[in-house]
Length: 214
Image (cartoon, rainbow, N blue to C red; front, side, top):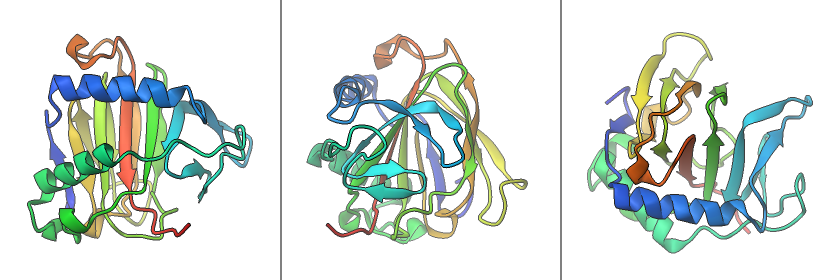
């Protein structure tokens, strides 16, 4: 456990499942809302490229339509991916989910944010606060390893812990750590296991409950 409610499970996804997810992500990246660099309200452009399922994430809200891209509805979140997320939650917290404040059986993710990092991409320290739910966030890593910086709920600065996330790793944060700041300051190019289906770059899939209706 990295912090109360924050759990790292190395090597949780087998290579065969990683390849399945990579293939699915390639399909989602083509649309109906394609993979894109998100433009921030101040005009900055995120270095990661993102595609969403279920709900479309814009800085800093969710929408049923991708009004900043092409106005289309994102692809739905498939049931098999939600089931994978519930299995991940159980692997991190156990069947009762006490550490994360939510049992896996009752956790119902309705969106996924899929970020692709090339070797130069970064993610600044931020909180996942657009959701109206305090249910845990499930994060899956595929491809190149990265430095994942997991901080505190009060500030973007210290204290924080740097964790190496490799292909197949699971990271879950909920309970007291649900609104902790976190980011990715570095990618390690060329570290992806070819068995993962990634020839370069990192995929990060985060599953969340938005708590939104409609």
